[in-house]
Image 1 (spheres, helix red, strand yellow):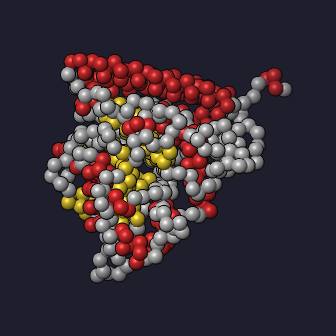
Image 2 (cartoon, one colour; image 1 turned 30 degrees about the vertical axis):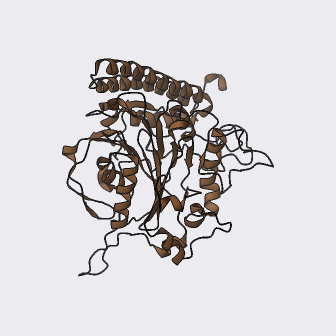
Image 3 (cartoon, rainbow, N blue to C red; image 1 turned 120 degrees about the vertical axis):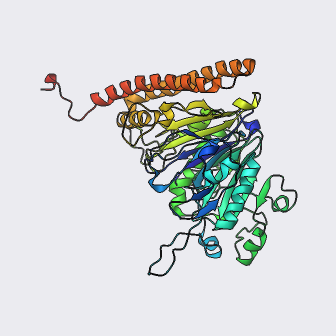
Length: 487
């Protein structure tokens, strides 16, 4: 699924938290935020798309999930944090070159063509991965190892990147063909930017086959590379992106500009991003996978990057004047996003309230991110009770309405949008600060559900206020507008 991912190491954040975030850019997939209890998890899982069946361990834990409201294509849980304060986002579609796919083909479902023949069962994919992994892990590293075991046993029918975080570590894992994989711990002081391409541009094989401190991979990865002549590096350095990824014309327009803009935001002085002597341009294939930011990164910064439409550049599709390149590149914040989540695992607070999930439904460019506590037994109806019919009774559809109307009248609506986003973030942080203190002092962590209800009530009030504003602006600029004075 076309998505964008940002990963923030512990020392790169403003509050010593780890963060993993991703835009789930499907095809206007209606989403909700729910809590899944262990008693509701069946011992055997069956995929809708690939028909694969997986026996599950018998000791799952509670976790949050952002499933599709329409279950016809499966769960598609997208993102969540479990009771052990481990976050996961799955998955970002990445690129793989033909040499890799020839050596280790994807495991795709194939329906029997003739009577008497059996269907060929497929592997696991984005539909399945989060529900097969998140309820059964106690750390980010364990997430990598559990998913690796599943990939090696069942294979996958697509090329995917998956992120995990706990209080201290962030791990990024990328699939290689149908069964192979590699994973890398994000350096604590760095931020990873991922735009639908194979991401990792360095990897320590000695560590992966030695101490395994910050690098993990398939046990036969060295042999796999050598036997299939996959190593295209010319300088002796091992660059996984060059070995396993793509360098297509589509990357230059669809993927690379997103990495360029996020890198430009994080390191405006460290690298030269603009002008004739720029170190990196929007179409550069070698924008680094991870960067040391020039400032401590906040959840709001992550959301801002994932909302981008190339503000401050001639590529912004909302510019009034035609720059000749306006709208040339695929924006980060796009119309078809179902949900964007920032899974934040905090330090300096009790274990019971370390996990916070910032939820933003529909197009991130126009909608607000609401923080909620994840160690709860249920989410408020405003987040969880989403139907396929449009309604202002929930955060998803209200957000979608705000975005569609504001896009129509961008220049007059953007001030309302910015105030809305800032208000929800500020009030959200204020409410969380209040309840952090109350729960820490009292030891009553059941108050997290009360806090979430207050957060949702605030978001509902602010969303209704903003919807009124943007509806008014959009109505004024309707094409059939006419006044008697126009005669």
